[in-house]
Image (cartoon, rainbow, N blue to C red; front, top):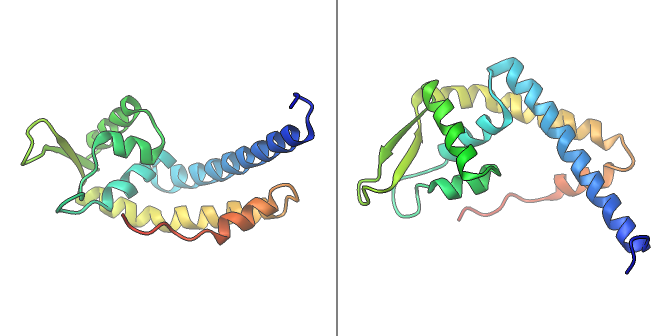
Length: 154
């Protein structure tokens, strides 16, 4: 295969379209969340992920797992947790069975803000997808996104 190989060119174009769709969706949601709730997409995602934790086996995520889910490095995730903790939206505490482990929970204020922000996030996502569906290059990707089923709970 060469750099001008049609298969590589098509693959690169597909990747560019996917990247463009992601960027448009994220920017649209970012504006809506910032304007309505003083939250970034990353902050919203972190609150959402942590709000789904539960007591019991596998109920709390380690910081590396959280970082993977919100697609940030561990250090960036720690800084994000600290910012939200400073705002009173998260709290950290030691794992009761392993004093080396630290858990992060969403506070009542964080849950309330998340509940307020969820309809904004969902509406902005729908708007961004509807706008992207009007672009012939992005429309097939929008159809794929809309056809995806939520992953089963682990």
